[in-house]
Length: 185
Image 1 (cartoon, rainbow, N blue to C red):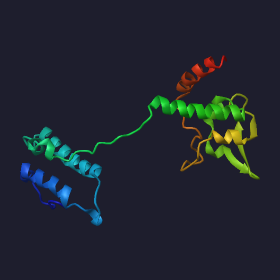
Image 2: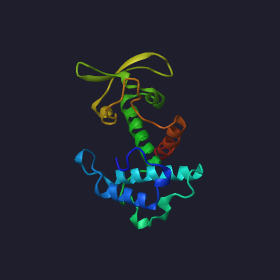
Image 3: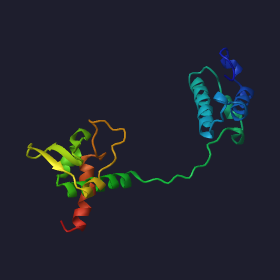
Image 4: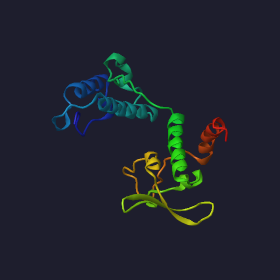
């Protein structure tokens, strides 16, 4: 939209890049709407990356964006994000799965393999239709309200998706061991 379809590499200089930045900041309004700085920064990065690739391919000698002051470039707005570490997320998921197993009586190995197709409602009662991993015997297990508190929402998951999004069995065991030790088990 900015330059048309017939721009050649020798036309992309410092002025072109500065005008492109100005266009994004002042005129670019797809469908008449303002665009977030994150999107504008992404567009800037795409052109900048393409020009860096052109330098590596020896199509141009220098990326013209390097001649523009950093203060004139599109920057990402500072964001303050609260986040959990991977370990905290995994620990939370493992905790929920473990407590669910405590309230429904399944082994953690059976919880790891539990899929949404195994969860159903029979006359208002949530049940699990599972074959115990150790015995291979099928059981139809009613779920108590306490067990249901620890079961995640299904959301967009399919019948073949696992109920609990857990890390590897090794990581599950690593996270469970300190809890068992603290409980004297």
